[in-house]
Picture 1 (tube, helix red, strand yellow):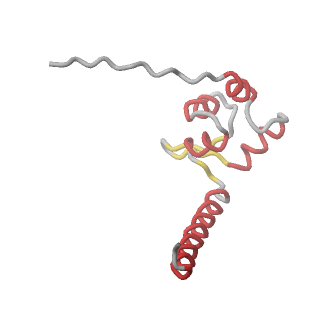
Picture 2 (picture 1 turned 90 degrees about the vertical axis):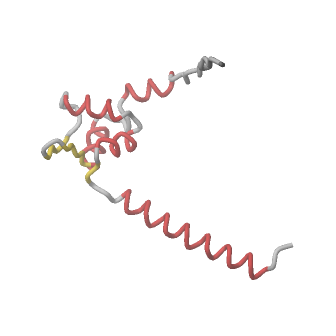
Length: 110
């Protein structure tokens, strides 16, 4: 059985670690301008799909040279206006997505 003081010290360390993680998540969630990768994670689609929709004018973007930023509030408003939190194609793809099967690699022995 562990010493109660040791257990208490370990719990205090874990509480500090979790508090730091909560602070980090709050900062991330309050971030208004998202990169393409962050917007993809936020929407649950690929970065390629975000770029494609942005290029076609389906997602509101701000371009700064070669960088592209998406406003989180504008994304929310775009999908709320359509009555969805995710694009319909993403919802259908997620429902029908199959996991690829791994193929064994060929190995040549000497």
